[in-house]
Amino acid sequence: MSLVFAGVCSHAPGITGRSERADPALRDGFYAALDRMRQGLEDARPDALIVIAAEHFANFFMNNMPAICVGMAEHYEGPIEDEAWLRIKRRRIPGAPALSRALIQEVMSDIDLAYAEEWKFDHGIMVPLHFLTPRYDLPVIPVNINCQGPPLIPPKRAYEFGRSLRRACEARPERIALIGTGGISHWPATPDSGRINERWDREFLERFLANRREELIAYRDDETWRDAGQGGFEIRTFIAVAGATEGCTGDLWFYAPIPIFAVGCTVAVMSLSAAAR
Amino acid sequence: MSLYYTQKLLYQLNRDAALRRRLQSDLEALLAESELTDEERRAIREPDIGLLYVMGVNGQILMHYAALRGYEWNAYLEAMREGERRYGPVRTGLYTRAEGR
Picture 1 (cartoon, rainbow over the protein chains, first blue to last red):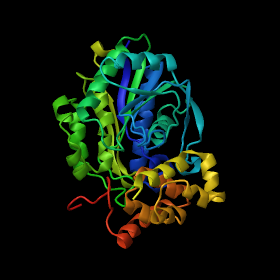
Picture 2 (picture 1 turned 180 degrees about the horizontal axis):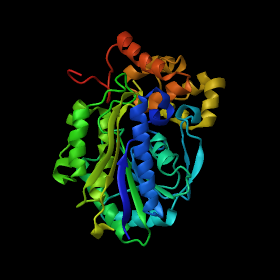
Picture 3 (picture 1 turned 30 degrees about the horizontal axis):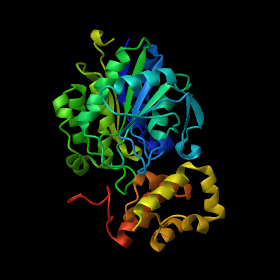
């Protein structure tokens, strides 16, 4: 069956935790785009949702950091953060262990992966789920690409991982949705929190939406760090979605810098070709 | 310099409720269990969020430790700025200032 839905969206703790401090017009527009994405996701009738995220030291630390890790648990728990701080109530989220295992096995033909049967979701996954699966009834398969603690995989490998994931999904009967979630340029958790390089973001989004592989894999971390901050390393999550939807282009449903959310808030959905579905 | 163990203790505090209880009841013993310098122990104990930032603690770890220790968002950002003013630029890691930034 392969992918029935694919897109990307932002995550950030401020999106839920500091919502009242954002420009209401921008915030409401962003929330509306996320809700449109929820509707699109539901209309695609997925059996499971893969979330490619960039977690922030909730599960993985520098003592044993996987480059890419895929969840294989019966269920997950989140948020790991304080509920009042994030304004998302802690809960259990169903997993899809058999599907996870099959996908991991298949992807391992191309890419070395770690897997985890235990995973506490942080805001990087919980904020998207809060908007996209508000009933928390859709089985989720979390994927983490290390974007926090260098050395990191180069963008080329993120694209290849996406390609491989797509091939693995095509071998399965389930209807599978895919969301990548990360920031583009941003300087989160620094004194410069709220700084956003809109020009850099729009150039990245142009490359991403056109799915121009060569331009996406050309990003170098030293330049990204200089122009887009350490948060810019999270473009790997978007690039993996581009790899999973190679040959398809995307539509931008929302983009606006919202400084109190510390990120250029983005919602984009790929137009999956008939061949891909 | 044991930045790795400073970050590891904060990472563990952020995700382990039992360890967080020891933060309240048994902090000195907890600090003694890790390979930390006196400066690192002091920064964790007080806490001195600005100094932890300048030491190079990853911001994603520090953000949650600051929240755990009761820092409101603006106070947390200001504490990092104060750290740079007081202790100088970030010493190592991802948060060292880029030229012209």
